[in-house]
Each structure stands twice: as structure tokens, then as C-alpha cells.
Image 1 (cartoon, chains in turn blue, green):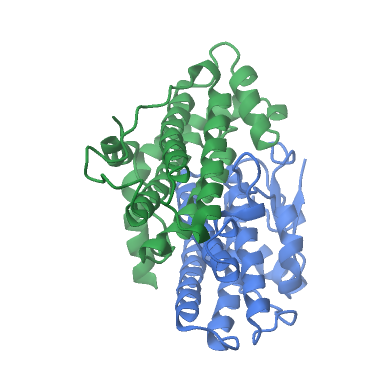
Image 2 (cartoon, one colour):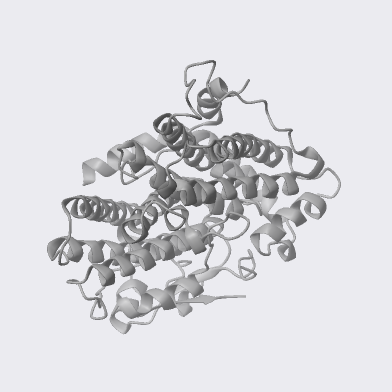
Length: 217
Length: 220
């Protein structure tokens, strides 16, 4: 967490050439979406929102596929939960897209080739990874947000991701230690707080449009 | 979807005015915090309590938020301590869940006490029957689980409502790291009383006043 300091702000850099070009033409001068447009202090909110928007796009696309092609042996209750989660992620994605307006990054192309959507274990295992990644991402991004309106919105989303994580854990392991957070919660009773630089490499295998974060001094 | 988002913004908005004000003031605070102190969360809490504002300790606004959080954590920790030690209350298949939740709440108490140092409030006297309304709280699992879900949802809304007051301070991240754990708890417990773990796509904050009004019946 030591790279979370006001003097080493994280900005998002999109390495897809077409993506970078498309954004570079339309963003505000201090929007840190590419190295050429490196953010200075106070300019990072759009970058943080786009970071969240990227993760919500990934989650929404994943659950959309899960509900479209349910895994073998799915129960009615499981489908109901996964459908609700899909609806939440789509709502998060649309909320961020609308908040960003013209500053929103383009829709991401996803790569789910590593996921076996016919397998309960593969689907729920992936859901578990995505939800916990999302929690750590939002927790770590909170202090990068300057505008308290955005902080409030992020807060309204992150606890829903945490509720999802518990629901998925319960499907995988029942209402036990895992549902309360298991190994994702440390001895101080704290969830993770990840920097964008920690999160994006974990999301990268699932996104065709490459996304990276640089921490600038 | 557009309508839904508008509704959500409307729902969030009423609480924002105050926090926007706080946020502006906290920008000054942010610049006053030495960058070196913004280390890992538990360390930050420790450092903030003893070094960041050496002359007068933590800013009063932050002390107030942390003591408010500590009061809720005391309540939760005491609730699970009593529940987990009540023989025959918790079915065996849920014992690990409630033991884990109890451990988290006890850890939150210790973390906040440490951060606040001598400014920490004392544990309140509690009455989980709320004056007899929930007389069987530690003998009837349904009552116990219902109150557990209530406390956890309340905790989620309480931390969420205070995030703006902590913006720009080193304790924001730690508060967020507690906040999401409370949400895990809420989602794990709610199904035990027949509710989905989630409420909607966006959880709503509660003001300090709203939270205290909900918690007061359980304070003796």
C-alpha cells in the first residue's frame, strides 16, 4: 500500500492503440488515460471512475454470459442469485458510463476463453475472483478519489460487491467462515485495498483491450 | 436503466451536501498529512493517532467518526460474544460463520481503540433484548440472526455515511476495509432469515443520526 500517496498518483494507461487514439482526441487536458496525458494532483477522478467502469464492464459481461448459458446442474436459487448479481453489475456499469459521459473509455472486448461456462466450479470460482478483486480495487481506489460525490457512489457499489462475494462464497462453501470473508479478511478484520497496478494485471487475462496502470512520481 | 440511475442519484443526493462541505475542508487536511505516514492501513491508524497531529492528536472530526464507529463495533462485538457463548443457540453448521464474524468485530474494536488511543470512548452498556422486545435473542436463533443481520446492515450504512467525513485522511482506507467486511457479514447472515444477501444494486448510506436512532434501543 506504500504507493498510495498523494505524490505518487496512479493513472490509467490504455495500451490498445485504437483505444488510446480514440480517447486522446476527446479527453480533458489533465485526464490521465495515457502516459502522454499524465495526471497531476487533483486530476485523477476521471481515471479512477474509468478504472471502476472497466472492472464493472468485465463483471457485467461475465454474469451476462453466466445467465445466458447457465452451468450444468444450476438450481433455481442459484440462477436467481446470479441473475440478480448480473443486474447489479449492469446497473453499476451503466451508472459509471453515465457519470463519465464523454470521458468514458470505450466498451472493452472481453476474453473468457479460460472460463468453462458449463462448469459450476469454473463459473463460481471465477465469480469469486472477480468479486474479491472488485472489493480490493474499490477499497484501494477510495483515497484516490477527490470528489466526495464519487466517493459516496463508489461506497454504494463496493458494499454490494462484498455482498456478492459472500453470496458466491456461500454457494461454494455454505454459510461458514468463507461466507464471512475467509482468507480475504486479515487478522485485523480488514478486507484488502489494492492499487490499480495490482488489480489490472489480474483482470488483464480477461480483457482483450490491454489496460495498465502506471504510478507516477 | 436511465430512470433507475436517476433514482439512485436522487436517493444518494440528500446526504451529499454536508459531505461535500467536509470534503472541501479535508483537502487542506490531506496536504497537512506527511506522505510518509500514508503506509499500510493498521500502521496508518497507529501513526495517525500518535504522530500525524502530534500537537492535538487526530482532528476532532476524525476522532468523532472513529468513536462513532467504535461504539458500533463495541455493540457488535458484545453481541457476538454473547451469542457465540450461548449454548444451544447457534446451529452447528453456522457456528464457524458467527465465530468468524465475532472475531472480525473484536478485531475492529481493537484497531479503532488503538487508533484513538486515549481519545477512545468506553464500551457502552448494552441490552440486546431492547427492553424486552427481543427477550429470546440468545435462546432463539431466528431472533439472534435477525438482529445480527440488522446490526450488519446498519454497520454497512454507517461506515458508508461517514466515508465523506474521512476523505483526504489516512484513515479512509481502513474505514473502507472495515465497511466491505461488514457487508460480507450482512450478506452471509441475511439468507439465514430468509432474505437475499443483497438489497439492490446500490447500498444506501445512513447519517450518524439515523444510525444512532437505530442503535439506541440496544444501549442500556
